[in-house]
Image (cartoon, rainbow, N blue to C red; front, side):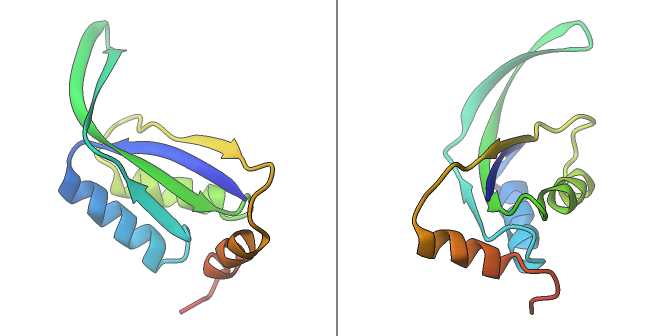
Length: 106
């Protein structure tokens, strides 16, 4: 299992991204956090914008497809996507994630 971190520019888009990723079985679960200020340099200028954090749970095998789909849904030229390994957890939860992200599930 892996956890992917990203963000969205607003709550409506964050909800849409979460809905699509879960419905398409690319993520077992997507958590949306409260808006927070992101500060970063973009094309030589300091940017400060509010964004909605996204925490996505999936399998390592499904991560590439999730990243590709997120890129299709996301308006940013370079959306943040970090993949973090999961070193353990509840066996029943990890099994649920694997089941929910099985390709071809309906």
